[in-house]
Image 1: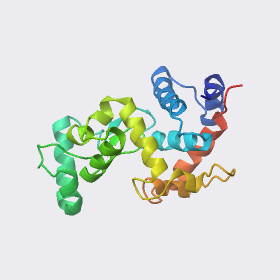
Image 2: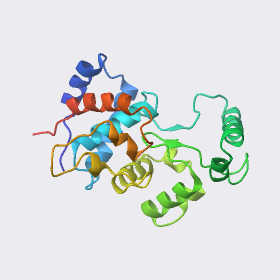
Image 3: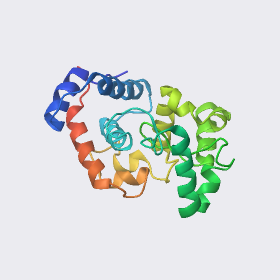
Length: 211
């Protein structure tokens, strides 16, 4: 199993982003890196760079798992706000995000990299990762268990669960091609694509294998 040079990463992170890594952020980033190293299907540092860039954007630069609308407090207000937003602006999504009503099990976005959303995506992810419906029954598992979160991220981005687009389309293993901008289509069209691409290119400069 190849290992990422974390000492180099931490040093170069400061050069690329103009600030050092605080303890909490370092721990969260290294959890993602550790999971990447442990997964035999994850083979390219370009993939890891793009995953870290996506996490930087989706988690508001914390690299910690977050829920959709995490900035709204308290929790009851957050859930009510999401429900009311979808009811007004996207009733179709309301049916797959809140299929059990405002107070029932909900399938809003959760995760530290990919914001897994909609009941059908939780059902698919649960079947792919566990071979059963445990994540579908308990969607907070993606917040509570880093292994669940990372498995959903890695398998989903490799296999094209979210939009049909895959990591290998933008970062093929048989070449040095890196389409940092269009890789956003793996997750969410081209929303914030150039911003995330910029992060990814900086992260790539921070990454090397040990030895």
